[in-house]
Length: 414
Image: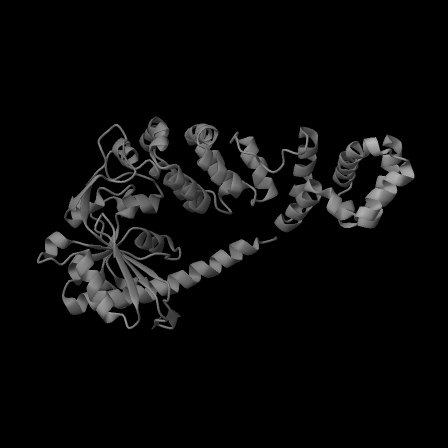
């Protein structure tokens, strides 16, 4: 089996991120315990979910229950305590939702891992309002402090409500209690079901990008969608238009349509009614179309065919071939690894790179092509080359035999 080098690189990055996350959680636990706040500062969401699933932990998101702690001990306060403790420069910013964002700017070795460049995100437990049932959401227009119990129910899926207390993570998560405040997060995770902790219509109206995150979890982790959630997704699919096109394209390119799940994700979006909305946006929103078209140009040949098959109206870099030749290419690419298929497509796109200028001119001279037909001769030569290498793919890597065959073919045509 041929493994995509990018897949190997991603596995390495996942393992490295996991080790750094483990080291960071132990450090954060020590700081929180020393400050006496470890019972009310939590790791939430993806880290706990991935731990239960046996997947690498990539991010460590912290939530602090500022209402339980009181006395101004909130996300910004905790971030400043961390900066005093971390022995290297740290950049800090706080966004409009009260989330403190830290970036480690120096070489900081923890448990043998260098945390330079690591991000630490610390949020306050909060309640949010997105503008009601009309789906004016994506980013909340009102945020206010809340208890941790109120915070978890605003999250999109029950398995992302699971928590660890920092107090319990001094030795890592192996023996730390997983807190399931909704009472259904662990159950749904065990059953691999995508259930919302609140009304799914509100969940998807509040932030329509969650509709695409559904596809991520179903394709990457094999989660199933209960009938009521599936019906809500179809009802709310048009609200994708309420999210910024830049957020949607970024989510599609970097999260949903990533290898090796891209094909499955395309067909999942089609089945859920999401692809029709995205297709309309491709037709109507130029920056959205351009972002996806740029991404498509760098994809595997067979994935380009999948994009065409599901009807996403992008200029896939295969349109220079007539339909019959596209089908020939698809059959050929099935027997190649990704690198070979990409190189073969490159030969088809610009066959002139397989011969030098002298061959072109000498062939035209030998055939007696008049000056007035030279503009016709060049494209005809390229078309003949495409036919030859599609009929015999080995010719793409054998320029000598290809040019011999071209001499024969072009004599027939001219």
